[in-house]
Length: 129
Image 1 (cartoon, rainbow, N blue to C red):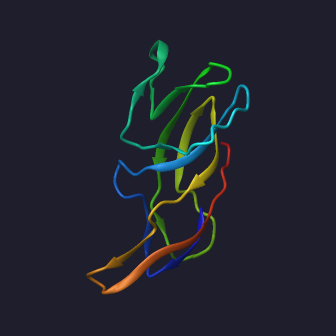
Image 2: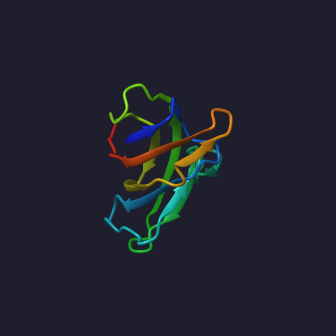
């Protein structure tokens, strides 16, 4: 992600229940549902056949293939080099591919410092590992 930061020193998701709102594409047939979906680190659904777990398991409405995505980990980033792309989260994708991200509630007021803080003009890109 890249962004313009106002009075921000570190960027990180707030809690393990932080919701990553994504548009997800089926890797088998290419279907992209219209609605935004979210995944969190704390949600865990067992995969068939004892292959571990994922944050979300869903069956594609078009091809009926069962796909999954998991929040693998997230990274706290220092804000010193504002506007440069940083890796913020890694997803473990099994049949689902994130193609879009929707940031939620990225501004606030710091009572201690008595100043506005914010993350604006968020841009993103997905990199396959």
